[in-house]
Length: 457
Ligand SMILES: [Mg+2]
Image 1 (cartoon, protein in one colour):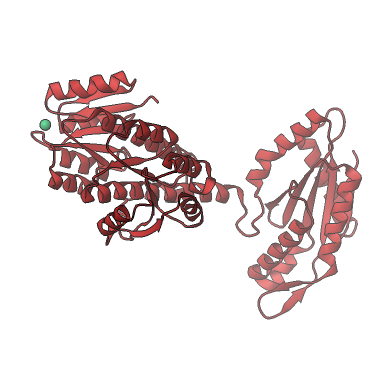
Image 2 (spheres, rainbow, N blue to C red):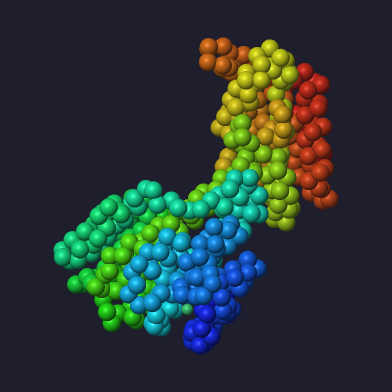
């Protein structure tokens, strides 16, 4: 895992100490001796995690963190605050400043590496989502990215998988008020609960009498529905090897017993905050991609999607010597429908047409709204005579029952004309294929409408 870590401390010896240890793990290391330098380095990009000393002259660590977290350009960079030992008030201040994690001096090697690795992993996930979001250029995305994710208004739903009564009671008490806790005393039951309920974090105890908690971690990671569910391991002292193995399996964080309440709630909050951020990002990306290739009115694919896929389907058919056909359908006298029933009536007709069209094509067929009242269906593995039959079936389906428009029970008769063409052996192109379908459609129109014309060549 290569990642760039920025170490910020006003004491050069401290910087050097962390630098050496990070370099030994093959991280790239950047350094800064004060707040303003640290902020500048982050603004210049390419920082994956910041290790930030709290006590610095001038702008202290809290202020640096606050500034990084309030700037959309740097707010997604994980910040680990390095505080003096046992300064609970520092930890609370750090979290208020938006820190993602904290370490106490002197920094323990295992903790340093596991926290950094876990944050690097999360950061790369966020980066990927940010990249996808920006390449799909959604208007809503900028707003989303710049929003400060202080989404701590709703209590997270948390699952605890643990079989020891005393431990369960302690955790329950600690999380009272800050989380909605469900408990599974059996790991298998815990697995199903996690898969069925939308938890925002799962706490897994390593202290099962005859079950390896890491097995559950790996099961949760391999299941699609729980792949992004944050996992925190509750381990005992001396379980370093197990924790490292867990981190390799993809757990997000761990706590060592005896568990400190502040630490538990702080780490939990960090996991939940990050999950919510990534969930929103992911949902937004998915929605953007769908919107970009879908016709809003009919739910069919749009012309942009057709343009980018027809070429691929065509090339594949030619390369495999398989047939491929297309049909262009056009609603007859659609302008007069719009004139007589308004655009809402016209929209009702287009929606109903799309519904009937979809009913009559296969899953592998590509049905698109080409524009206006024109629709295109691309049919892989379909030769001319079969395509003509499909087209005829669609024509009949449209003509056989009137379309309902509006909510007053009004109906109108609708018909379509269809032009069909198929890929020819020898030299053929997408443009020529579409041109032949278009000519066939023209013939269907001029021949009296409500009919199918197929162009053999
Ligand atoms: Mg200092």
